[in-house]
Length: 308
Image (cartoon, rainbow, N blue to C red; front, side, top):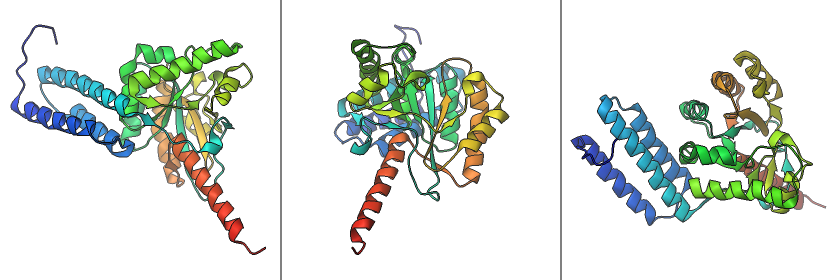
């Protein structure tokens, strides 16, 4: 909408605006709860997306959605969203969680975003299936497309660090610090989320980045199932590849950015559907690590109670 023009809001939208403003004001005095605050934001955004209105009203609602995300970001920044990573996983490299075979949970992860079109399409599929995932973002993409990152976090997904430039060469400590810390700082500024999850570009562990991350208590998150979607296989091949590698506690690597990801978007509903048929449920990386930590503690307590 152009500047210096008055806006006449329909009565229904004014009522919604007043109600939302009241909700946001109340949120400022309440502790943030990721499971409720983000779900409320997601629900409101979805309502806006699904509302059938005239073109002029759609434009106003789109602008209102942007304002609402900005308000959510301000609250998140003030209160601070942080992901609970058990201490045993701080400063270590993980490829998957070690869980009992019957504990069929799996984590979907997406790299190289945020990216125009594809990040939003991935979010739509996840929303339709009521699934939360983990997104490892590239700093310079985050700078260029901040609203997509805000939406990722606002819809309840977890965000991680994938360096600023996504380069593969060797980094001295100062360069590694810039790549990782600068990205984490921007993640916090844009989304309000403080993350200690790091994934090295290309999965390279010996070029200075992973060492810096480990020394600074980042959890270096690798994967156990590689979709190889960067080679752009068709959706059927992508789906088959993920299913063959799926296992309890597994971490699936896919991409929402870095190029044309239409095949990934096409395969994602099939991957989710077939994994659900096999009894899998989907968790974020922090949730996956919490499950492993809980399992470790349970085993330790059981051993203590066993007769000597």
